[in-house]
Image (tube, rainbow, N blue to C red; front, side, top):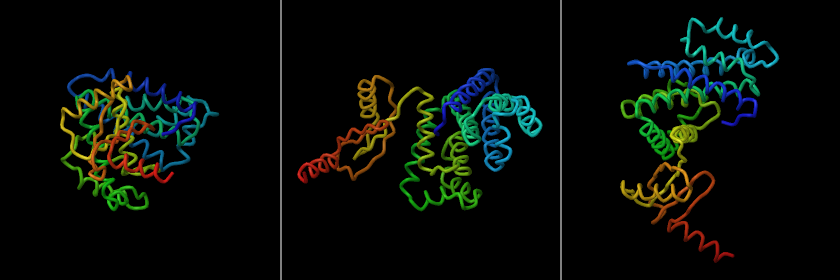
Length: 278
């Protein structure tokens, strides 16, 4: 998600309001309340994605913010909970760089809500890992990837296909995030979208993500040593996402952001061939 300066400021203000509401969410049903808040924010993303005139009206910077809030509440007050309306009131009162970026911001708030819920439930690590692994599974099946990413097909069919793949096998939060991505790709492919979500989960834990390709399965001790080494090198906590790739013929490839550390046999052979070719 790329936002211009005004939209970044607007999203930061809305996130502060969201986290104030989240911090006030307590009790035995706190997790359920956060689930409802996230679901309702995602529902608003769907509504605004299909209603260009409405999203333009709610993002119109030249109009009075009070008028935009009145429009919001007049349309949605009987359909959304008060916490959701409070978050959206902050959204429509802010100055966004455009209607599309406002909708992107609401989607980001929905994702943050669910990741906070996973964090509170002690499930953030599991959700991050499931999102990453799901992305790798789909990336390995091009037919499945095309079917799940094609916005021209019926969304109910895409959701049914995803359900057949993950129903009962992943955390409910992982499923909600993946369902929304498949239902409303908004220009994103399913694999890239899942990768972005896994990175958001890692960022929530204030860690960078190292995408590791290994020629063999790494056991827990090996992963711990690699994570400790990368943390020392980069002077910040590093989360590992490990994928087995026998084509490497030995060794590892580690990618952190735009930096690639290629310690694989295949990588060294490729470098040698380049040197020989001049």
